[in-house]
Image 1 (tube, helix red, strand yellow):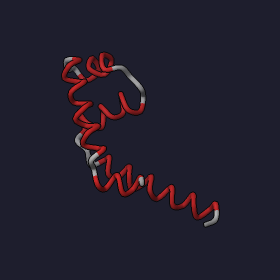
Image 2: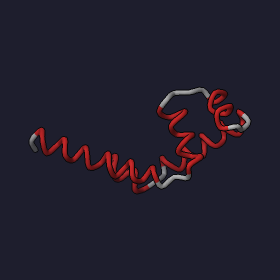
Image 3: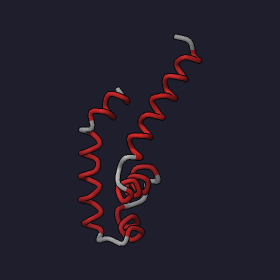
Image 4: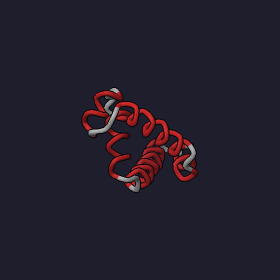
Length: 78
């Protein structure tokens, strides 16, 4: 496989993964962006989202479990 075809394949996987993540509800996308991408703390994220820190932690835990068990994402990222 050439470097160009490898990059094209990576780009396609990236597009498909992003499309799958766009299917998440808005509050879960915000949680993913804050903690998973921006690296914000649970306390900072909770304040931003207007929820309790404990609720933020639990939501993050559930979201991570769901994403880890998402067959479509696993196939894309394998």
